[in-house]
Amino acid sequence: MEKKLQTSMPLMCPSCGNIMKKRLDKKMWAIHGKCLDCVVKMESKMRANGTYEAYEQEMMEKNMIAYLQDKEQEATEYIAGLDKISFLQNSNGDIETWDIDPKQIEEVKLKYMEHLKEVREHLKKIKGKK
Image 1 (cartoon, rainbow, N blue to C red):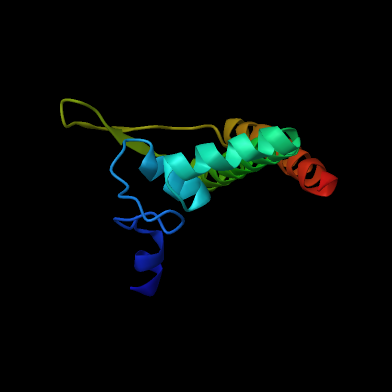
Image 2: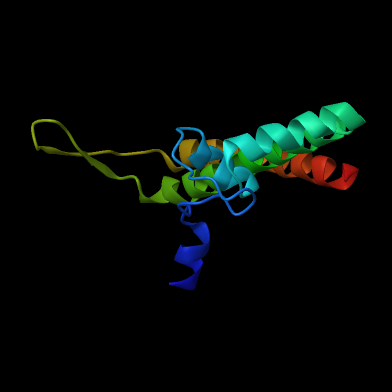
């Protein structure tokens, strides 16, 4: 329950106290923990003092890391589910049984495992730069 309270958006911005009712307030709350107006002010100050480029680079790296982690999870789940595919229910409600060649499954698994390895290496490179 406590975790739910931390992730739900409050009615008022904790930084400025204004009501968070704009469309982008929800997105900014999820990323920065403040309303859109506070984020705009923060980024304007960063541009003025010359730290915006580093902030922008950090945000792009975080986005890339999250994307690659999603791809890693997707590939892992796909590999795990390959052995379980043996039938499919079509739009008519009929169940089709598939006879899948185990060699083909192994080839696809190897391909995805190689892809997964590349994703993990790329993640290590990005995280290592920090």
